[in-house]
Image (tube, rainbow, N blue to C red):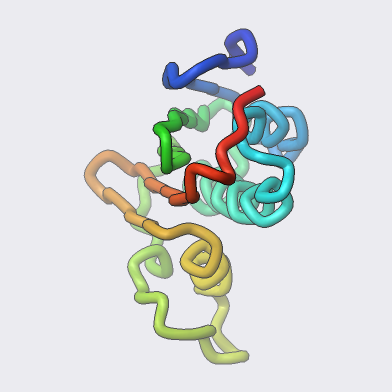
Length: 143
């Protein structure tokens, strides 16, 4: 795992790590600039996105890497999550109109992401999931 020093200010950051489901230290770093009041919800969303990248993208292959780029502006928090998978995630492109059927094998994670983040975009060419959370300036908090 490659983790830069704790980010400060508005500088973008990048974290890369071997496919693993041990995500706690990675999530801690990715949430370092998020106000404590928003952390539980965003943590859930980021964990879901990272688990999807590890399990469905990289097929739990520890030789493959997940890369997360993250940045903040005055009113947004953004994360771009890339994996090294080779197959197209069939559930990743469904809309956010509602929960999938009870018998559906996938789609719940994307539903959760659409509930938490203001923008959820999958770029199949780059194998990158882009997540954006907009906040009011009064919610800004930078460690």
